[in-house]
Amino acid sequence: MLLDEPLSALDETGKQEILPYLERLHHELSIPMIYVSHVVREVARLADYLVVLRDGRVVSQGTLIEQMARLDTTFINDADHGSVIEGCVVAHDDQDHLTTLECGGGQLMVGRQSLSLGERVRLYIPAADVSLTLIRDQQTSILNILPATIEEIVPQGEAQLLVRLALGDGAEPIGAILESPRLLARITRRSGRQLALQPGLRIYAQIKSVSLMRAQR
Image (tube, rainbow, N blue to C red; front, side, top):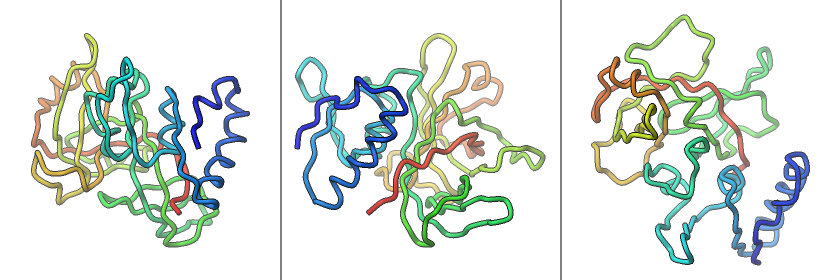
């Protein structure tokens, strides 16, 4: 089934009504789908494999998670950079209405979800909602703080940097295949200079927001 920007004429409310239907169509009927879109969040929610075209030519392709973790993704506007991470439901907190997810590089908490323990989910984390610190802050309202290792840093415009992190205490060596979770962070150049950030440095990623995109079937 070929879907060429099927949601482009809808407002955000309309898109949220149609997206679950497209997910069910694919999973319940096992229909292969080619979904054409310029909207990063739609791609992050629906796609498993991503082919990037420019001027009618393929410039890159691979799994969604691999492609979203690249720093040279020309199909993404600077403001839309983000990471896709897969997780598994491991706990529910009914008192604080939170659900805990294991993502391989640590645990993340999101608002209480009606999901079963062990159910797999897909998460989207905007790069702009990730800040970096050299020391874990114990007095903060941010719930999701994970250890990480800097893999690569590239300039983004005149004032910002895009940083790719390997999550977890046992991060793989730089240059390893992208198998463990990768996270993108967008920070200012001044912050990068003040923290003396460089590849190989062990830091902490403070994640302000996490969007649960869909349950993995």
